[in-house]
Length: 314
Length: 257
Image 1 (tube, helix red, strand yellow):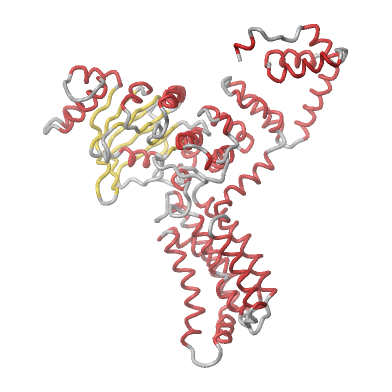
Image 2 (tube, each protein chain N blue to C red):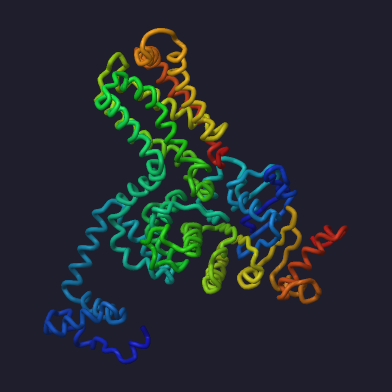
């Protein structure tokens, strides 16, 4: 930079003034504009000259109006300016000041996505899609009649697996840093659980709707069990860690649904599975029991909240 | 006032005693944490970072006891921590990554973009701020780790082997950053590199087998080295070995402290 400055042309004051007035001939104006791209000193002088004109006053008024109309933005803009003024070394803060006013809403959403990101990435998302596609392929491709029963048997385990694969020392590469932050405990675990549920609940329920019932419960019957098992996993994880908790809840569900099918005599396996699922999911009593289990798990989780202050057992 | 106050701290690590009835008070400044492998440096930093729970004893950070649930969030908002093994999300850009940690530290949303740019500029990565972390070299990833630790202008900053993977020029720049941070915050730096301590630290704490073997200024450790004939190429290295040997000598344990 400096070796060029010694012999480089700079904007004379009268040119800056005429540029601001709009009376500078075009070729001169172009070379001035090219020059101020690289020369901060001249840029600030030209900028000051423009600021002194009528256009500068209008610009300042527009900026003030924009900052005022955005809720909370005027405060944030000032806070950033104050911060930059306090720390003169913060050179990078300069160009973004004006943009910042409108960003908090966008960046809050973006941060939520980042927080959820590791949950919906990796091996889990392809697995969920795989379950949905496999169920559809079984039903329509292979003409398998029990596809919905099979899907309903597997679906409640999917959110549980998603939670386990996204939170905790074994699953999150950033966990050591996360564990030292105020938001890295239960708040992060819940954010990721919500992300997992937001993907799996609609996707698997819609898939279920596309499959013929053939005696299996309704496609939405697994929603409450899915929620209850996910919350139960989180509550249990505060005692034994994520992986063991998921093993207990997910494994427990699969045993409850599949074991009687394997043991019971007579009839086609798919029919027996549909019957067993009906016992577990159909009717007001069964669904109420699942709702109660979800509430109970949520209560236990609230009580066990401090356990999430430190890293869970691996 | 001391921002870190540790009394009777005992920490077990895989059935061995990593820290044994440790007492330590640290205030504003840069504190070098030295000691041989297995001396308990990482265990101490993890407990101070509120990640590991002590088996016995009391850890007060910024005037709050870290054992309870209540004061913990407030303390953690003012904490910065770079672990020895620093994991990251390779698909994030530097900006996204540091902003994500700022979100975890519950910084006000409006302050985050400027704070992120400032932290990244302070570690000298301003030109790579929108590069994906997986495209960075090992030393750059380490500097991203330092940026995420300082993004919230922490009052207590804990750095475990921050200079591992940095080249000599970057280390010189990093020491400068350490001195700047230590002017207003309590900075604890665990390191194997004695010359880092000599150049950047206001105080040295030497750990050995879970106990404090020596405490003093780098100058005092250098003088100890000049007076002794222990092994080492620089006076402060000789001071390091001399202090360790004095601590290990039978009967001398109480005398050094």
